[in-house]
Length: 146
Ligand code: DQA
Image 1 (tube, rainbow, N blue to C red):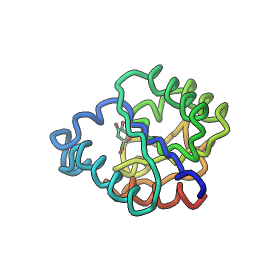
Image 2 (tube, helix red, strand yellow; image 1 turned 135 degrees about the vertical axis):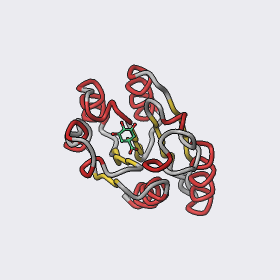
Image 3 (tube, rainbow, N blue to C red; image 1 turned 45 degrees about the vertical axis):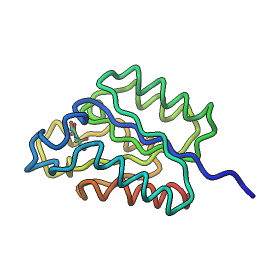
């Protein structure tokens, strides 16, 4: 029987504050709530998930490298504000050779101008934005079917 696919779910800065952080934009689910939903969906899909959050750019770079070393099938990445600033994350996504699905709870294109550019989008397999926590579950569905 083939091993169940491993999917990394990486979350960037300030996403640890979900639930209380600007709920009118990001909703009222906490990151733990989202993790529970992703874990439930993973179980239903027969996948394994590794869910992490950090406020530090280098941790996210290290975890992208780790995803490759661990043989992950895909990475779901919500890089938070680093989406709009980080050449290091762009390079890491490009380097690892593992498909990355970019997720945002909000729709950055419908927000401030400084959120319109993503350093991740051009190197991601695809992006899911604006659908709230559901975006993570949809990204997981896509990740296992890639
Ligand atoms: C976000 C969108 C980013 O612009 C913002 O900096 C975040 C959250 C989202 O999930 O909607 O921290 O990635």
